Image (cartoon, one colour):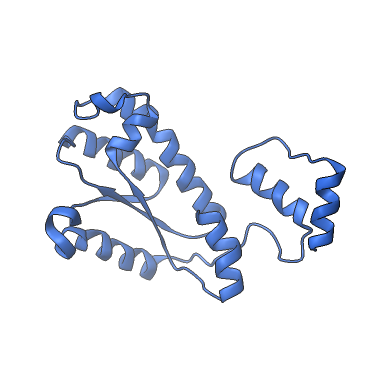
Length: 170
């Protein structure tokens, strides 16, 4: 979603984000680490650490746009202090700040720390939006760039009929 928003929506609407908030949950990170839904309420630091590769990829992708990021860890009641600390430590190693957001239970006050971190990040950032590709790039080359840069594909291919259709749209 971020790639489409930044490369298409921001470009066409003239928007320039100053910071990106990446929303994560410990539950989702544990699922990415292989935990089954029925076991998500149990602390599992090894699965959480394995699942951090998903969050790492999102952070890396946002950095490709030269934008700073803050990670909002949306709290679930079963999240343990050890799990929260692990996510914060791993995010710090990635060069982003991670904060707990408890707005589901506390309303706006539960997200105030995240908001303050966003403002601080914007104030301290030297980042200036950089698009992944130039607007005038041919459509298939845009697809190839997204496949390689965002999804880490080695390359992208398409039948002649697809490439011809893309040229017609251009």
